[in-house]
Image (tube, rainbow, N blue to C red):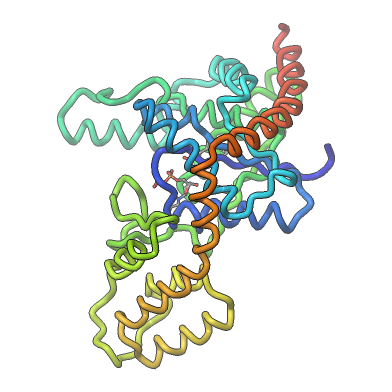
Length: 331
Ligand code: ADP
Ligand code: TRP
């Protein structure tokens, strides 16, 4: 295949929120639409298994991510769209790569390190709550990426290290066995690299400060009203560049709407009114996808069919690459 390969995955560990959408899903959909790349987007369900070990929750969240991508306009005829666990070649490659990856590299991976640091602070055993899946998480991610010879990996900022680890692993393999894997590059949308949550910290399910993407209109309104703002009084000019309300607004509005809203802030509309406008523009934008999401979640066979077809296409690419890797290692 001569076109550029663009690949990304999202792990189903919670309901999709605005941070996931703005920083990961929206740019990925844009790339698939605008360029004549080969796009592979997938549900990283076995990555989620490192965190979600309740059967119903795991199942529900996996369908939720699939329905989200589809509701937001992913076209399965243009994008190879699959569930990671439907492509066994990934896990075979993951084992091969794990044998060639030093433990030290994993010790430095940020998600694992963060858990160790927290445990140390709490004065408990450093390995408390750490399963081997979490420890080797970046190797599985490297297998996801390298098996498809990905050129570009659109991700949020916190995933940069993982893509760099995939590069290191690919480079190590290539040095030992000769040129085999392409070295992938991450793509981070700098303008929206960190989407703030309700409390102003990074929006994350770990901080319980999220606005779920497909919340009902009423809930959405309530959550928008909770967004933390500064104490500039009504009528006083507000700085759009430091405003979380503005940051979210521009993601859902046309450039001309954004300009008008910017002017209003500078002239000094109240935060209350600004939030009302944010709600209008967001709700308008999300209404159709929300309905589609709800329809898809009520008809899971539809999702299954699409994922099944996607997995067939993914495996058709994965199998010959895995064979190549196996022949390189002498199998
Ligand atoms: P969470 O932080 O809620 O656990 P995930 O780690 O599952 O979210 O993130 C999935 C994707 O969305 C990743 O690419 C991540 O970088 C991106 N992402 C999540 N939250 C944000 C945010 N607040 N700002 C920017 N990107 C985000
Ligand atoms: N680790 C990513 C996240 O937490 C999800 C993921 C798994 C991924 N495999 C990937 C992202 C491969 C890009 C490419 O968001």
